[in-house]
Image (cartoon, rainbow, N blue to C red; front, side, top):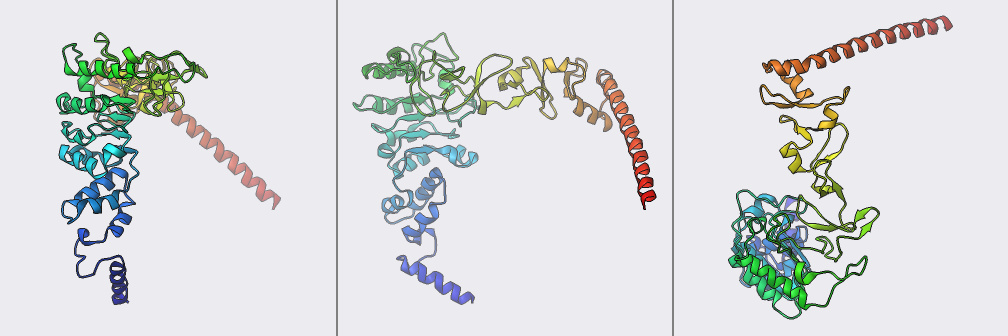
Length: 408
């Protein structure tokens, strides 16, 4: 039975154009078999698979084209494991872009988690007339752009490539997302600031664009990318364009009580109301994508942005279980599992974690023990109430049993 199964596999390989004797490793297999195997991979994994095979192949480009295919509107490295993306270098990125003929195929490029690159590997994109969106933030959607340690992606490597794209007649570029590190210290003398001016001028040379809601003309010539040196929150940010659909809106239009286009203060991207729902943080009153919110009050469910939680603005977070409770709920009597900061031991702890520490014999702070006093009393009262209810149920059960016996 085993031999018959092996014969079938050999016949399949021979039929596909190979021979059982020559197929000793992956590169010996026919392109058709490899292409079928690659079809189960995510887009970036498929390209990396083809690149890895090309290094040992006799005719690499013929093999890789069969594996990767031609449908490459979007290349998002967020489709592979984060740890793998972090290890990719410029040589890897360049090989992938060449392998898929990115200059003629890719419309959206997102270098998610590619923190190990300087940008020189983007050279294959030089002069692209088809690319519409380039995300150089190196983080995924709905993630904060701050990266620690700072990535090595360099203006001196990337900006000449971007210039080669925007200076061509027929350029399709609609959206650029820059690394946060380029935007943090605005300077009128920097090469980055000079590029922003050139990019805005490119938009100024295009036909006027109006808001899709109100049809008012948008000030792309001067404000497509914010170049206000005095505004560090928005300097270098793309304006009037939704990151998701890349459609253009103004910031004044409202749909169902929500701004048609709004900026998320967590991921630093603009989204239209049709692509992403926004929610105002209870503490800072700034808009954030619903998907960017990581915290809400454990009691009332009001949402708080990550920055406000980290700074303790209008809420406290337990340092043991990370539960968040807003300050308003903390002062309302009768609420369960509040979070308090102890001024004596500097613990910020919720009721549950403080009680668990006490029961494990780890609670030696007199102030924390005082905070637990009402919890212990409440727990004792609840236990007594449960015992009373249990006794009542026993009595009722006995009465029912006697009634059943009397009927029999």
